[in-house]
Image 1: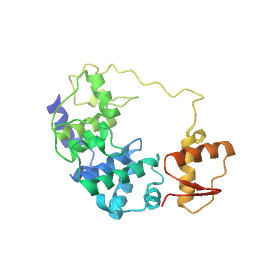
Image 2: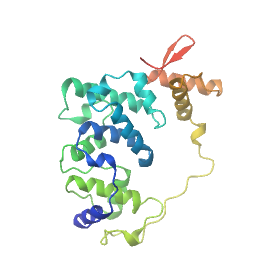
Image 3: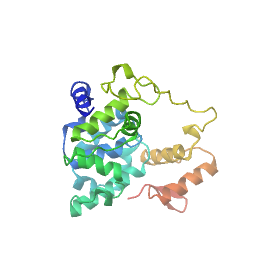
Image 4: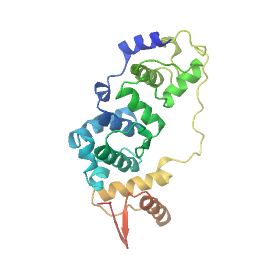
Length: 245
């Protein structure tokens, strides 16, 4: 199946800008941005980020407030500060043998760096890849390109809700034509606008824009502020709330 998948990827793979580089810093930025953020939203932001901070050393020297300002809209703002902290380690000590020792770098991101930056025969297993493996019943191994191929297959053909088995290159897949659609979100499930994460994002965006705190219920705002302070995303000095310097 590996050969068929790689041949399909050569013809049908997505042309994403971070796939045209082996720079570990650029790939780290893309992987952190792509965590729980859609590819289409990341492309322009990744390119703009690298223009502003083209190296790990440049990002490590950037003020946290500037880093948060550039991150607004990508969600999960603490990822930006962990990325800056990781780059500070790289700027000071170089890339470690164990990439998971870098702040904010877990097993998946480490595997992505090993495969896509350092050309190791490792397959990073994200949600899409895990779904493909679950349906084929086999964890494939191969060259670095295999990881990209599996991700693209899961994102475009072997999807969660409506897999397109008829055009899948993996003709020997035991689940071909027999995959049940994933259930829809239950009615009454919490909307994003009702979550603490939504309020946290609005607070950071308001501070970046130089505006006052958002007009939300006092209890929700206080809960969001407490979490932001705990995560180092804002600083409170009495009634003053500001971004870290």
